[in-house]
Length: 415
Image (cartoon, rainbow, N blue to C red; front, side):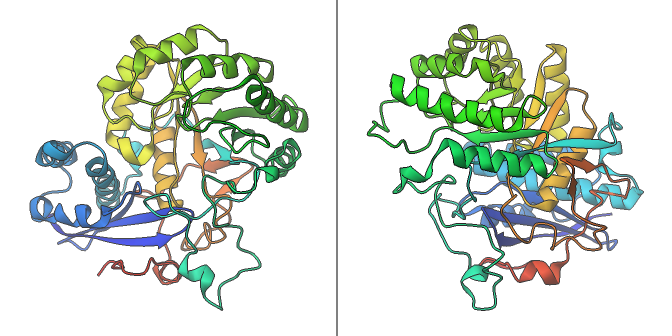
């Protein structure tokens, strides 16, 4: 079996969902999904130069060769591309040998994977471009689009920066009750949001008033869902050490599962300062690409929860990372902003590792998430969990005719 072609398609959702297709000379075709990035599809197609004619079964060698071929430009966008191709290669291998991907990864620990719902700032998620600018997707702008049912709003980071008065503890609590009512047992919210009073958005500091407001939001959510629902909070790398410590301590009564990305990702020793100063578990990792970085987050940063991204790390490397973390009794909570194809890839990875807490779901506001899955027996997520499929490969196929309705203008749809 040899690779014939690698091609792409892009759907406009909350983010770009970049789909990757790998075709072989035996008629076996695999699909994967890559993490968003400007110019991503051109990078993916460039890999045809070294992949066409190769045996997809030699996946470890092919991944190493792809990474070596872009060493001068890595990691970043190059690894986003490789992650999508790798998932498609695993889908090919699974279909060819009639094995689910979790079996290729070494077997499964669980039959269902727990999913946590990213609830943003208590409101509907925005649709944003690869450069994080607000947009109105073409399918929404068209007259025939289901406007009444669409919950995607054209906003940045889930909130309207021009209207901080829309960010209220009551809105957070209402959203928490809604998502808990849908069966989710883990919820994540943002606290790096516009405040109803003047602040400085650049100095990485938090005033006592800001900390109190964030704590009020989180405690209102905790009261709304009780102790049966776990909570996590995202900060999107916005704070310095002092502010992060103040915030983490203020949130200790909420008993968070983790406080995510309170610091910029590059200063690993700074994470140790924050973690040592609070009982709140600190998590980070979605902007790291190498196992060595994660080892440093454990040994130098003192972290006990890591949050790598499924599509950036990839399933093959993700399995190896899980082994590394397990040596230190560290748990993983997987970051995931992808569509149904990438989410199911994450399910296979979570099924195959022992030390997973949950897999993120970032698409609660995308009205066609389940609608583009072919022959689906029902919603992918039921009561906050996804059943691990036993079908060959990723165990999921997209309805390409339906997906085509949400294609991104100017991008090829698998040529």
